Structure formats: C-alpha cells, structure tokens
Length: 319
Image (tube, rainbow, N blue to C red; front, side, top):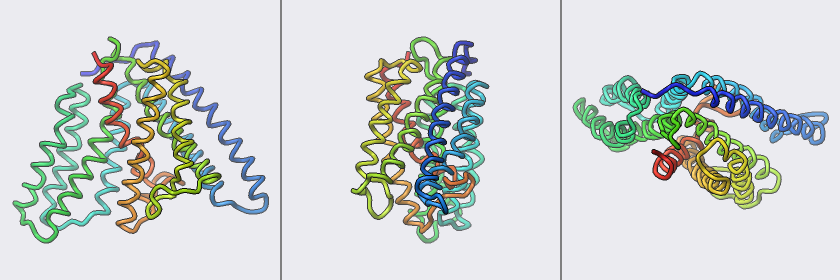
C-alpha cells in the first residue's frame, strides 16, 4: 500500500493553496473590472462565463487542497468519485441494448473499483494494463453472450472508450502518488498539484486570450479554441511549470518543457471530447458544475494529459 504523507509535504500544500488563492483573487478582481467596463448596465456573455468559471474554480481548489492534505487516500477517493461521475456522464450519451447490461454492470461495479484498488495497492503493473487489455477483451465477450444485436461494434467501442477516458486516464492522476520520485514517495502527491495547476491555468489563459485576440480556430466545427489562444495558453502553462519546479523532481527548464507538453496534449484531449459532444448533438456532458458543465467537461484536458505526465515522470525520474 502507498505510504503516508510526510509533514514537509503538508507545508508545501499550504503554500500552494495560498498561492492558488492569491491567483484566484487577482483573476476574480480582473473579472469584476471587465464586468464593469464591458457590461456596466447589463451582462456580457464572455465575461459572465469567465466569472462563473472562476467561482467554480474556488470550490475545486478547496476540494483538491483538502484531498491533498488528507493524503493519498483522500486523493484516491476524490478522483474515484470524479471518475465514476464522468463515466456515468459519458455512457449516458451512448447507445445501449439489453445485450450490453452485463458489460455495463462489469464496467461500473468490477472494472471501475478494481482500477482504483490497484492504485491504492501501489501496483503500477496492474493498473497500467487492466483496462486496455483485460477489460477491453472481457467486455465484448459479456455482451456477445447476451446476443450481439445491431451496431455491436459501435456499442461495445463506446463502452470501452468510456472506461478508457473516464476511468483509465483519470486514474493516472491519483496514480501519481504511487511514484517513488527521488527516493521520496510521500512528496509525489505534489505532482498532482503540478499537473492540475499547469493544465487548468493554461486552459484559463487560453480561454481569456482566445476570446480577446484569437482569430484562427484550430477545429472550426467542434471548438472555439484558436491558435493564438493555445499559443498564449502554452506559454502561460510553461511559465507556471517553471515557477512550480520546486514541487517536482525536474529542474526549472525541464519543468517548463513538460508543462508545455502536457498542456498541448490536454488541448488535444479537449478537442477530441468536443468532437464527441458535437457528434452526439450536446453542448455539455452534464450540468453538475456551474458554468462548466459536467465532470467530463471540467477534466477533459487533464484526463488526456495525466497518463503522459505519469509515464514521463515514471520513466525518467522514478526509482
């Protein structure tokens, strides 16, 4: 099982929490100034969306800070809950028949809990292959035993990729606590803060600058993201990574480079999930988080970035 968190890590978490709150205070003040300048007598859609997202961010920062302070168990529970909610949102938009009931039961009540139990055990070998190999092979067998029916390939693929995105990829966020980095497993919990802050703050910078100066859309039919916004988001994410190098095993330059890489992978993930939403004809995956839709909407970038970040860190810096 994964060890407890050392005392010095708690101090670092408090410091990060204070810095995040300071940034959010600045961003909130900026939002209120924009509201007064752009919509003194009414509402401005872009500004209101920005302010609403900031309000949601305050809640998420508090939840993440509490989970990090509790330690690895708190982190695993938090992201297990988020993973379950995301899987439910994803599979709600997929096509299913009675033949898929066994596969769905196995996905929610066998595959999902086992994935997070393997992480709690600290077994990287099991949680790295369990879903992409065993679950991918077993779920179609369970469905075909009930009768294949129409659109069998597309139905089972939707279930498989729901698990891949919402459980396998999400589980790599708490899996960071299992890494033995520089001989100190306890401090690896800070890698989660690095991942989330780099990707989410980069997204926030991309959203604001994209709305203000963005002109060239990357994927016109599925997302408003622009090349200009993503360029600014990448630079901002790299800057955040550079400043946060002290909570990682990386030097400042490597931290900035890895931050840029995982941010760009996150942008790709956001575009993929936006394309799935467009294919299903919906605007958001859910409505649980005010101003940001559901869990999948909120975690789209981090979900794709997490496995890349986990394996880069494990390969180059793991014990």
